[in-house]
Amino acid sequence: MDLKSRINREKLPHHIAVIMDGNGRWAKQQGKPRVFGHRNGVKAVRETTEAAAELGVKYLTLYAFSTENWNRPKLEVNALMALLVETIRSEIKTLNENGIRLQAIGDLEKLPARSFKELMNAIENTRHNTRMTLILALNYSAKWEIMKAVKDLAGLVEQGKLTADAIDEDTFADALSTRGIPDPELLIRTSGETRISNFLLWQIAYSELYFTPTFWPDFRKEDLYKAIIDYQDRERRFGKISEQAN
Image 1: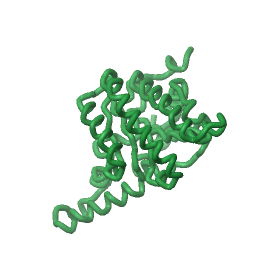
Image 2: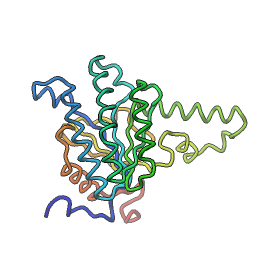
Image 3: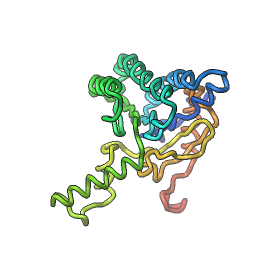
Image 4: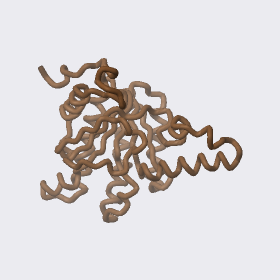
């Protein structure tokens, strides 16, 4: 039985988040510059997005560029931004053909003007698609997101539009950049690292974590299938005991 046929379509995670890691180390193994790894990572993005949509996953979030990534060598950052523009522009047609809507989270207005413009154009051009939502986390930091939510809510309290007692988990979640998007049930990180790296800290409180040694450029549909099968084999208790969960 192949991996795809082992997946129970009735128990699919509605939302899968992925920390795409290992591009640089993959390129180093090939004796190539780090940018070579980022370019080859685009194929993994395409395959993962296609596989998720085919299965019926409704939301896929990819950690594409963190606020900390600006600290990388300028040449690499510039190449990443150019690759972002190139990839978004070339993939709009495919996204529309497959019914995939593009969204983005993060401090987007601080992206280079050209990158921001292409991103907004793609979001607008795919906004009517309903098969799956692909969310790119760009210039994203969970700490930044949480602090922004705190400041926004504090501002509403100051203006008398909200009372402190009215702030609960739902109110706070609505102040985050993922408002209206269900929390991920499954978080995948590639490359063998076992860190969260400042990604969706609020949203993954009860996510199942899956770590694979596969570098992102080598990640294919079968790797996604393995992660989903592993997820489906777990017992999700949310603080309850097994008998209650079942």
